[in-house]
Image 1 (cartoon, helix red, strand yellow):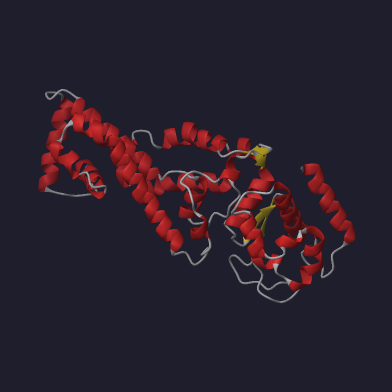
Image 2 (cartoon, one colour):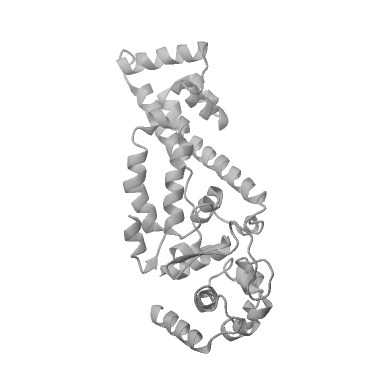
Length: 314
């Protein structure tokens, strides 16, 4: 699947999302309505690893940023849907069936020994309580559950998103991100069929960690250990390559005047995407990271080669 996604010339989030749902999620969540209410956290790693690799984001990128950026639901939400479907199926089964008798026996035992770790009934009750629908558990009615099911799922989705938004708001790593969150679906650039390398560039600017994937290679810009810029001696970072005084002439040659700082570049990918501007930003990043990482003066030949590379690729 990852190989198929890497071979795509144009990126659209619908493609990896459908692949993940039809192949990975359907396998990983098989029977999860019974066993998965307690194990959403480790399964979340599966989803996160997939989308981080598809979007060329560092593996250390916080999960709540990836979910907010891509619009992917929590795995725990999907498990909760399966759990509610299982409960509805049990309640609709004949009252003299083995399934229903076992369920009633488990309810009785759970009331006497309320152990969250080992009781499916207690886990379901806790889920319904958390979204304000304890009445579903108390009434124990399939019809009532069927009526309230969509409301339960909607409320659970809102609660999970609220947690992610709060984590983003409190983030010290990307303090700017909370101010640009405006929707629950993936952001428009992920569905515009842009060239894959430009989509990756936009994602890396929005989630500007100092580990950048460019030209088939990861570049560590002081992400895991503090490094100094070889040109000016200040601390290296992704934002610094747009602000380094020694790269002023290079920025003037490549970037338009309104993209003369990292803040302006950041603003350009938080609003309506200008494809030409993003290509120029990508060209600048590529030249800095790949061609003139050490040289204090830009080699004109490398500059011409790099620009030709971008033109051909585009």
